Length: 116
Image (cartoon, rainbow, N blue to C red):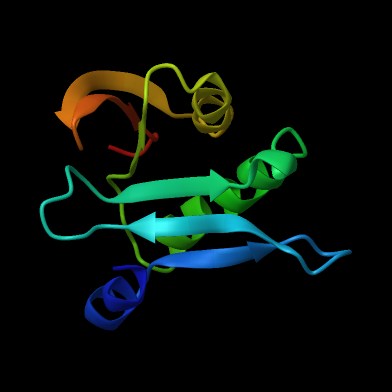
């Protein structure tokens, strides 16, 4: 799905490596597959990479790319309500809770970034 997204949309998520070890620790980037609620900044990291600032740094870069290169004014992050760390990342970048939707079989909080 992620490779196809790049082929169809010409943007997507990037692999994230820890600089020192070159270890793959996750993926961060922009998503908008068919049927998605909105253009999204998404981030998923390995548990041992949590709490080290990687998510915030990568999400900030993805947000800048979405605004400045892709020229997207309407950007969200879709987050499960119990995922406090991801909510903190989104809020640290200016996102605010807009609504809760049912998505992929569970409640999902829609955090909207400024610029709407």
